[in-house]
Image (tube, rainbow, N blue to C red; front, side, top):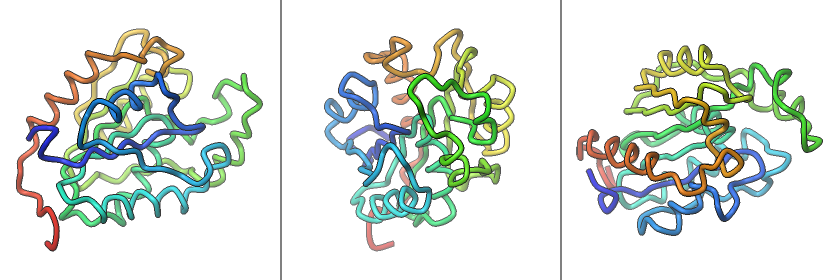
Length: 200
């Protein structure tokens, strides 16, 4: 499949993805991409975030590919059991934030991680009912290598670990992320166009 064959649903994490973030760049540059907009990016509520993802998938006119980052990955996982699977082609999940280990997360912006943990934990570990690609980092402060690999295995995902890529965000130098776009293209080509695109 190609980008023109799918609806690319960008699912940012806590505080949204800024204009230079790779997710925002993909949204601007890929014609079939759009952001899953949340009502509250700073004090996220799991049920509200999940409901928005479910609604955006339902509104898709082509097979949907979810592109999650950080807390957006947990949101996609929580939404999985509620999605209309006839409309989902796959998920490309980057830098998952391990909501079961929030005590170890950095606190450089006065974040209320405990409040988020109460809403998003525990991290879902059921196998996902669609193809999944996970890209994590060897030095991500929000998820250890071991945990990323274990979660990916539980989800039935193909997992890649990038060396010293931080949280794979603007702060780690991943505004332009050409390698990520290449990986996304490879993932799309691995998907089979068997998903119903509308009334199915």
